[in-house]
Image (cartoon, rainbow, N blue to C red; front, top):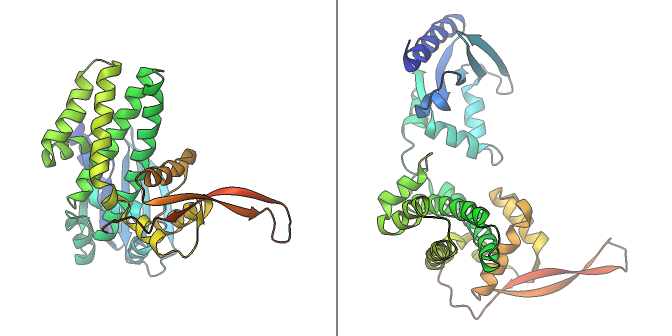
Length: 312
């Protein structure tokens, strides 16, 4: 039996069972099935949305049919709406709804949520640009260090490939689009001259120092032309602060507001990048170890450069 036909049969059997046993509003499938990348051992990830009244009720279980594992979550429509409004969870739920397959639905609200996700909302766009910009700058700095000292070129190639991926996500978000698993191809369609050179030439070229340096220069040029737009929320926030902000304070702001984590201490690269662009001024701030302690240490801090002519 063909793989797609096999999975469709399993899904259809599952649908017929659950709609007969409880009041189901929708069945949403995501993962391999929705992206048409099925393998013989692919699992099926399924949301079953019901008319349960208690939004805290959520059931999660797995079943196996014909060697295929079905990972199933059952919850109320109100639970889905709650998660979509939650700062902590909405990114994941929005992403699933954008990339899912609506297999069965008798609810107009849920249908609209799944079908009308062709354009990236402004709030999501801001988060994507800021998050991917942080990753991109971190990759840029790591690649610069490796190529400067002519260290492991294979590692340098890998980091530049990741950098191009982050830039592609920025390009797609700039166009108010959701990115998919082929985001580099999306970026090529939007900005052919730039991303064909960055992506296609990169994967086809030999891993040599000159070739990697040229790609890194192009990546840096791409960021230089767009960094004020990418880091707009951070720059605006720094403009409003009356005093220097330590690295820890800025890290907390980015996490609390945009859920951006300081992974591998990468955010300091962003602040130093904006310092090099003369957007920020670097200082040191004396911090007490404890509230009533006389012991202090100096932490790097940043403030907005009021001489900057940044147009936000």
